Amino acid sequence: MEVCFQSWWRCLALAGYSLFSTAISRWLCVCAFQDVLLEVYAPWCGHCKKLEPVYEAFAREAAKSPSASKHLVVAKMDGTQNTLDNPDFKWTGFPTIWFIKKGSGKPIKHTGGRSARDLLKFVQEHATSKIDVELPPEEPPKPLSQAVPTDNSGPVKVIVRDTFEKQVLQSDKDVLLEVYAPWCGHCKKLEPVYEAFAREAAKSPSASKHLVVAKMDGTQNTLDNPDFKWTGFPTIWFIKKGSGKPIKHTGGRSARDLLKFVQEHATSKIDVELPPEEPPKPLSQAVPTDNSGPVKVIVRDTFEKQVLQSDKDVLLEVYAPWCGHCKKLEPVWTAHKTR
Image (cartoon, rainbow, N blue to C red; front, side, top):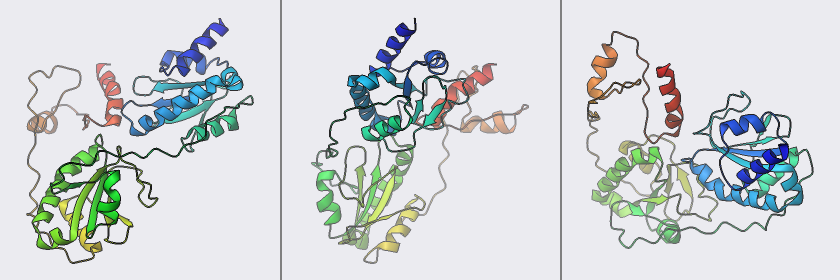
């Protein structure tokens, strides 16, 4: 029976399938027959997507190794679709990578790099038996560039890897550059502000003469220049003409914040006439026609009556549809209300 479970588990894990909560609880935490390298991931997580081909490649090479195939399971679990009761196995972010020595039932968290060699080093440091995996020579990351835009006449210039040198580093103007990700909620919120700032800058004689407002998709373009590395989105840089060095923006993200940042670092005086800041326009979803579910849906137009004037205490969650933490909370929130 143990051999059957062992073979099934190895095949399932190395084939790239997710392990389910029951499988983890029964065979990982109670009576694992091998060491286990386990990644807990989220389908929406950008870092997980970046790790996926590396993790899969490491698992394939491990499967070819006599020592690794005998002593190691490489596995993954969707942390948004599975929960574990074991208090030792709790994750607060993605990806979370653990090493579990056979029979220990205790995770050792990986905190190092995420290359195949980093994973192998982590495994070898904690393995109960000697493990050797022949990894192919590391190739430098393949340059990644979107196609050069055929029309780049908008107020925000689109930069790609293949135009970065000419349009940013060799520009005869200062450059304000946003590196964004299409899936990033903060980037989506910034987009209309950044576009509006660029439109106003284009109307200004001084800004149109001395400043380029640009953006680059950081998920579809790579840069070799070590000064231009981003670890999150959005990343906003100011590059003085001729300097080739980025100055990172760490302030607010209103149009006035962007203008202040530009003016602090510009090589020439820049004035941009920004319209008076208007208070945010009231925004409300439609009032739900059916609100009989266990979790009541509140919108702006019902907030006063259903929250402030409620004859009951109210527990209110404000969420965003794209937010991974909100997605993780949703089943817990709903289950709590149904009890």
